[in-house]
Amino acid sequence: MAKIRRIFPGGNTSNGFYSFHDNIIGLNRKALYILKGMPGGGKSSLMKEIGERIFHEGYSIEYHHCPSDPNSIDGIVICELDIAIVDGTPPHTIEPLYPGLTDKIIDLAQFIDSHSLESNKAEIVKAKINNKYAYRKAFNYFKAAKIIFEEIEDDNKLKLDIKGINDESRKVLEKIFSKREIKIISNGFRERHLFSTAYTPYGFVDYTNTILEWVEDIYYIDGTIGTGKDTLLSRILGEAKLRNYEVEIYHNSLIPEKIESIFIKELDTIITSNKYGEKFAKTKVDLNKYLDNSKLSREDYKMFNALVDKGIESLNGAKENHFILEKAYKPSVDFLGVTKVKEEIFNEILSYI
Image: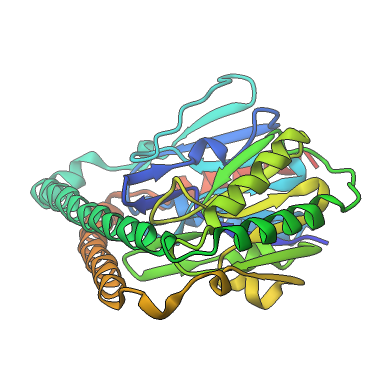
């Protein structure tokens, strides 16, 4: 049965823009189409339409969304065919690794009328400068939020029943890895790193439900900041790697060093601390019961949330500048030319079926 998963290959994080775009498709791919071009030039629409058409042919699609505009697509993967189409423009520049073999650059910039674009030059330059400022401001707020997060984390660790958590963790690991393995079709990654959530100009966007709903066993790890969710997930990942399992690792969208979800393919099992896990989980692990929450610093939590909100507010400024860029470019684009290229790519993909 064909399925759709929605993922973020990059994120607006406390470390700035964080890219896992080289994890969109593996090295064993049959084809990779890298779109180059301009804002408002039809890259996202091209990928969306091809994705929809191939899905109706009976193939599973991964939509890799843009964290700066979740309505736009940074890439699609046709899973059973090992074929991808990606946006290769900054800030996630992608270049062909195997030019002339599996990888092909599609230059949509050829369809810009540079003469008509010239009248919008000042507006484009100004929007680019303002965009850079808006992102810098957002990333600084997220960086400040991370500092408060770490303060809460360190404070809460002092209130934990460590022995209780270790005993619980050992039981969870034993249960997960006692399951019988299944045969899988590899996508070329032993470890694949992505995001299932993102901080965007529209707020916090969460597509984790689309990676959970197809999986047999789901473990939900509940716990506030500092209760050891990431530590437990890291222990599970370590054990999966020792067994040479193929894993997908979904990172925390604010602090990408932290893990939010792990999909162990050979066990058809996901372990997640994402809130959607509570809805889908067969097994729930409550780490809050090992925390003395009578002395939590509510003010620190408020400050953390306020800084995250300010970061999102600043991203909204970046969205406005992006709209200006798209509006400036669109009248100069020959969309008939873009449509012709779209049909050529679609027909080429059909030849692999």
